[in-house]
Amino acid sequence: MSEIVTNQSGDKKINRSSNSSICESLYSRIFKIRIEEFLGLMFFGPMVFLTAKAYLFFRASGDVPRVFVGDVQRVFAVILVVGITLLIIKYRPKWSFLRETLPIAYCLAIYTNLHDTIHFANPNDIHDTLIAIDQWMFGIQPVVWAEQFIHPVLTEFFSFCYMIFFLFAPIVAYTLYLKGRKTQFRETLVSIVLCFYAGYVLYVIFPAAPPRIMLKELFTVGFDGTPIADAALKMVNLLPSDSRAAFPSLHAAVTLLSLMFAFKHVRWLFWAMLPFCTGLVLSTIYLRHHYVVDLLAGFLLGISAFIYGPKIDSWWRSKPYSGKVVPDA
Image (cartoon, rainbow, N blue to C red; front, side):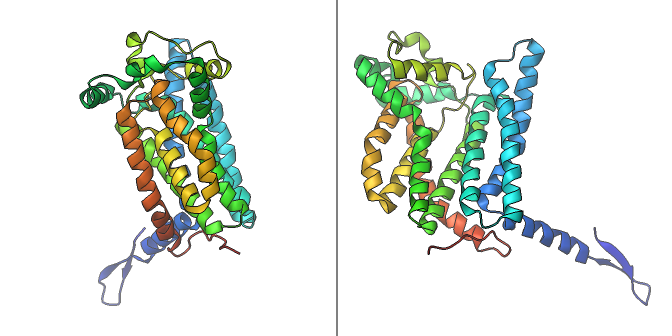
């Protein structure tokens, strides 16, 4: 608060030093942690609110889907992880590997919860517009057109590629970490985390249900009958029917981003990942998870994260009080 002081002549003046101290203290606390940790804390509140809102809504109706029970459990898991992270920052700053790892964990947990609860934040869907754009671009719905290629072998391969989505980014980042290339590791990790969080914001601004829900009456062929596809189908069926996380495609964004960093820093890993990353992108249409326009928006997001992610992290760490990163040996 500002303090009012009186000088010898009786004039009153406002002493703003206390306000300045509060701002400086807040500034130092914010920049003392790293940007990926700050973003996790900022998104944690909305995640808890939307998860509670969804859970209470279904509880009032007398039937809480399993996915929302899992979301509530994940909230407590994130609280535990955030608490551990803060303790490491304060008491064990040299535990660099654990500190670098945990933000990815709660980033993915927040992603999973927001994926399920977007419709409780913004009910103004845009999937009809996305369907119209795909129709305008191709004269047909690509997800429907792709039915002619459905085959058990392709279904198994594409389902496998789709299921291992969460592995690509950590593999690239932690390969760099294990090679002792800390600067490149930070560049990759922060860009991936920023890409995820930017995608969450866009999900809420542009809620859209996937084609497997919106165009299901047009489909004449199913995917069941093969082991991996059946497992993937069970995972998809756990998602709420009002899922609104289609636009942009984070599968496309993060996969492309992972490939670009692999190509830049670990070329052999790029070539090893390329067939599976290509399969993942194609699987989003083949398995009816995304519209083509989702992929285009996802690619743009991934490229933007590749360009600006390292710059944002560099700007953050240039601030006084910022969390320090151990440089390359």
